[in-house]
Image (cartoon, rainbow, N blue to C red; front, top):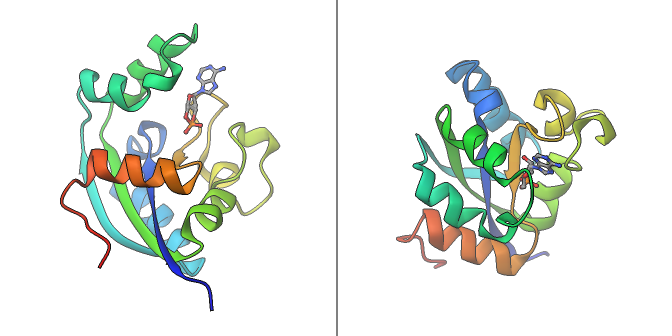
Amino acid sequence: MSKKEFTFGIIKPDVTVKGLDEVNKVVADINASGLEVVSVVHRFLDRGEAESFYAEHNAKPWFGDLIDYMVREPVALMLIGGANAVQNYRDLCGPTDPSDAAEGTLRAKYGTSRDENAVHSSDSVASAQRELHFFFPEFQIK
Ligand code: CMP
């Protein structure tokens, strides 16, 4: 049996602007996939924490647009657990651009555009650990 793993997800402002029912649909889809949304924190990011979180992109010409997007409405920060959670949640999200995403993936269902693509997923086990520590510093794998 696969080992239980934890990953980090964000439901982004293009979804949260539609209200809590829409956020809850995304959470329900993640749970229905066999993963478990262990914690959801629904709040605004401040500009500084969004800039730190996305620091790897700070030289990109679209960095300012990305930060404006991520602070304009609340986000839902998620701690997600399950077997192979990092890869399975990443697959459930689909590729960055929703127009490339397979039917049934979260970005195909909820994404608006490449820039406003509904959800974030950690891209590796190491990123998941770093990102979980950033937003859920009290979380420790038991
Ligand atoms: P994600 O892959 O979760 O993390 C980086 C984010 O930057 C990405 O989702 C998009 O929201 C955004 N992004 C990626 N490419 C572009 C782009 N070319 N222009 C603007 N935003 C982008």
